[in-house]
Image (cartoon, rainbow, N blue to C red):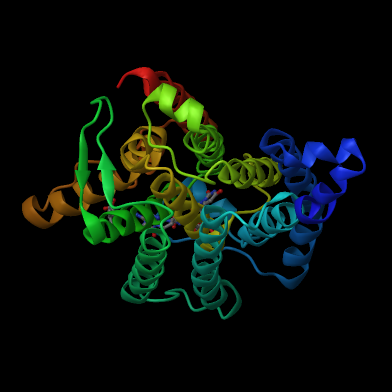
Length: 358
Ligand code: 57M
């Protein structure tokens, strides 16, 4: 709205020119989202406590989690709410990549809401079935990726990193690849969300890094200089990423150990889906494996654990996802969390450092 209402006024009042700049609107998106998230978060937690909408804790999990029973959840509502509120003011809705990313986030939010509503409010411990979840995720991702190609936002090519001009044109088959990235990201982020603030840290570093990459991909001169594909209007995703960083920082204020609130599926599925979508929209699918390395590691630990148990009837880790393994080795929860954050920061820096290596 700022952009659409205030920028045209710049013809008369030069000051309003600032709304043209992605950098200014990203800063504004960050500030608005973080303030709204902190202010709303406090009230939200009080409301959830009053209604006694708390998390139930599985009895077969690490003992240290039993004391978390009843912690308010569904914090994703004020994370995503703050992102939407902030971008309503700061975003340019003429940008197709921006609108597509928002729509995917909203669809994954709806899925998370149905699951959490059943689990937390209706007290049905199973929530929605895994099949239903996957079907919804794939349907959303397939439709989104189809429209990305159909509307000419991206093409069906895959750019292999570190190899200049190594481009594979999959045409419409890219939809399968892109959907795999989006669905994989949503589920991997969800699996990571098992310790206080554990997933929030890497969401912040990943969103910040993807925000920079979006700016580069949408700026023809920088894109050419870095030999990365130029994709028109993707710079607007920087504003969205800044809002995600702001809203997540506000959430982390309450989610840091000992957590006063969890984000729920409504947060983890939608944030994961959004990050995957931004990776697809900016053609950073491979680099996202590095940036979101923590999510990848968590997902791989589950795949290995389940596979090993099925084939050998033996576990590789004391418990999967891998953060539980370290907890059961005796690491205090904050130590696991902060070390995972450190790795995530390192991976983001590594990803940015590789930009010129192609
Ligand atoms: C999300 N959810 C947390 C909270 C959060 C296939 C299997 C590996 C799936 C996996 C699973 O269900 N993952 C989904 C994990 C839960 O957190 C809620 O869920 C939301 C995210 N969706 O926002 O609302 C618990 O996590 C803890 N938590 C915190 N702080 C936070 O900020 O402490 C969450 C956020 C919360 C709280 O205790 O209740 C979860 O872990 O359930 N399943 C598992 O992760 C289970 N692993 C397992 O069964 N491993 C097996 C096999 C299947 C691989 C094995 O190793 O042999 C573990 N989860 C739990 N207990 N809770 C094991 C036992």
